[in-house]
Amino acid sequence: MPLTTERLLDGIRRWVEIESPTNDSAGVDRVMTLAERQFREAGADVRRIPGTEGFGSHLAISSSWGGSGPGILVLCHLDTVHPLGTLAGPLPYRVEGDRAYGPGIYDMKGGAYLAYSAYAAIAESGKSTPLPIRFLYVSDEEVGSPTSRALIEAAGRTAKYVLVVEPARDGGKIVVARKGVARYEIAAEGRPAHAGARHEDGRSAILEIAHQVVAIESMTDYARGITVNVGMINGGTAENVVPQLCHASIDLRIRTMEDASEMDRRLKSLTPRNPDVKLTVQGGINRPPYENNDGVRRLFDHARTIAAPLGIDLVGVSTGGGSDGNFVAHSVPTLDGLGVDGDGAHTHREHLLVSSLTPRANLLKRLYETLQ
Image 1: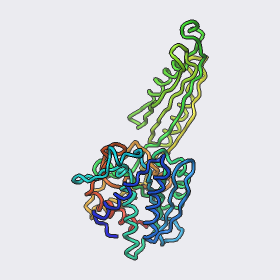
Image 2: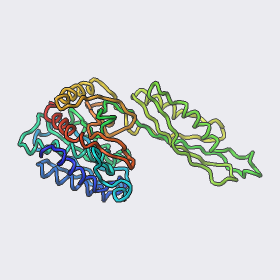
Image 3: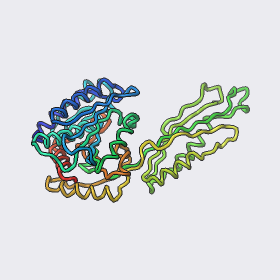
Image 4: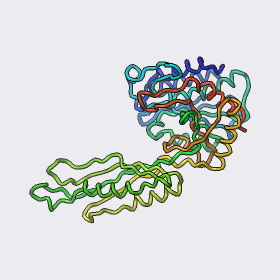
């Protein structure tokens, strides 16, 4: 298929106009069905993996050439954060100048469609690529990939390179490193008592968690790229009861596995300020750090070389957000942020830049054609 701006934008519109929030498995399955049909029409082998745990299905797709040896793995997701009704309400699909708006258009249906289009352009030309190309379109990335992580890790074991079509950053930059993500729950159990008549008998779980929050937040170290955020606290039963129970949710971001191990030890070794209160900490790494190692740097250098003739001055950046690339980057050279340029992910101003479509599609096509 010709990688023209008009054709690319029309295809993206069709995917965007099928709303697919992660928690609506029927909507996710509808857009997966459209993607499945289009890949089949382009001659690809498609395996549909039924959804579990209330999530939508996934697609495992292989080029019709190249066999089963190590190849290129392209990671995509078709779930979005926008609830049903967003399209008819605050974020309708529309084009205003160089901006095309719509739920999930930037994160990441635009990039997911470009990944398909670059493959279809090669297949329809009757040509092939030095390596087989495999795609995973998953349904649950926006909530941490709980049912697709094992699929991604298994696919990574047969990959020579991984390309992730999450959106570009800050004017077209691609991602060469991402922080790892860990999640923890800390719970305190104290002793309830009447807040007026027997206050001295109580042991406040909320007070204990308050002390712990100060200690936990102080672990943030910007120089090392470590951030610790207590994002939610819940506890107590009534204003006139010394609270017996309280718990808090912690988000940890780290750049390296060494930092992940250190922070895991520190968080799990927290002790109660009040010895009469029981304290427990549970959790761990959700997405390991995606480090800018030698393999990533070599892959980036190759991408930058082939991007220049397309008019793209490729720049690599690090980001604090995680993606499915985190699951494989420690063992396979990985490039991320290869999707569309734009802004406003997860907001009612989410948009892609129309002018980015053809150059970014051609960059993916050239990566498919030149990696070996």
